[in-house]
Length: 195
Image (cartoon, rainbow, N blue to C red; front, top):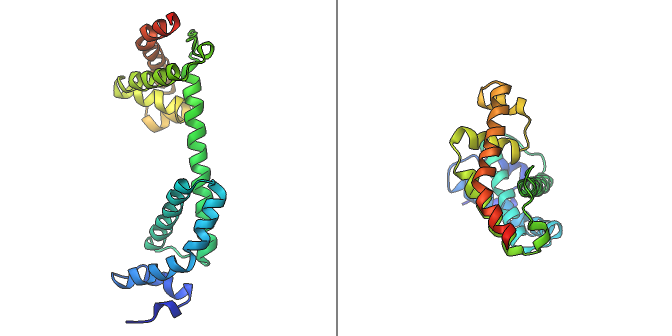
């Protein structure tokens, strides 16, 4: 067996494309070489051990997949650090989109849910759960339009290209799906307002 620890990064990276056990040996050396620094960096950015662990493992998986695709990396640690930054930014964007969507649903036009004045977190959580159930109950074409518009914040033009439909058709689907969600939620909204 070779002493892979003596290999430099440039020699180890091509070995990641080899079959097992060579691939595993090369990966283990790189992992042992950089894992401590990378995890410390993840912990510094997230300030949460569990979140750091998830980001850390995602970064290594993305690195490994990137190399397996035949792509090259000049420096391993800077690549991993950049990958960690991208993962964290993507997660933050997703959380921001979800929070924005939840807030938008709570403030659907023509609805005064009264949730903001009740100050009851339980009621808000219950309403959010009902909103998700209402969206899930829509037919697929309406659900798709609703989610792309509200969750993904895409324009009607972008949704039309994705769905291979006219912009007018998408506009109608978004309006109809929003009205359907409102109608499904109306009895629950009334019940919450009576509390």
